[in-house]
Length: 255
Image (tube, rainbow, N blue to C red; front, top):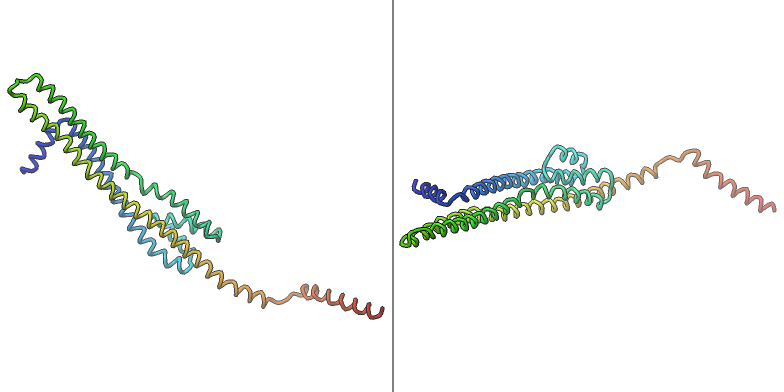
């Protein structure tokens, strides 16, 4: 109870600027908690989705992969949906990579949004604390000017200690928010790096699966072409040049 009483007394003696700092602390904490929950959820769903997609892409079952990413809302699914859609239309690796880069440009702002607000609230809390201290000092010196000379020293020291409460509370709010902002940036960068790694791995898997399928289909198509029966029209067209050559030889012999 003594701790809570001292906290309440500290807050009450800080003046009116303690309330705006408290509001800023609440807003910054709310944004930080929301971002932590969202980013941890994104990291978990991305890992789960990639673990499902990797063996499917390795096997070359692109239709199944397309159906799987359509049913999921993770960042990995959004990233690969563009690449797999382009894979169904074209075969070039460059086009698939460009499609995934375009999707990456859409995903990155969604991961980074609202994170800068945490640093903003940290700076606002610190500045409000300093402003509260300055205003408190102004009031203290104004009150001391009209006070009894014998009480000026005690009154000034008490007023200054009260005015410093806002600076202390502003720093107690701003420093943790600044640390949280750094952690959020680190977590966001980790997710973005993992998405870029997934993009490269998916491109390699799609490219290798496509080449492997082409190498398997090419000999089969050649065998079909060799075993294809020759039509009568083709035989007739081949026989005509031979007949013309024979008649020309006979004419030269008679001549």
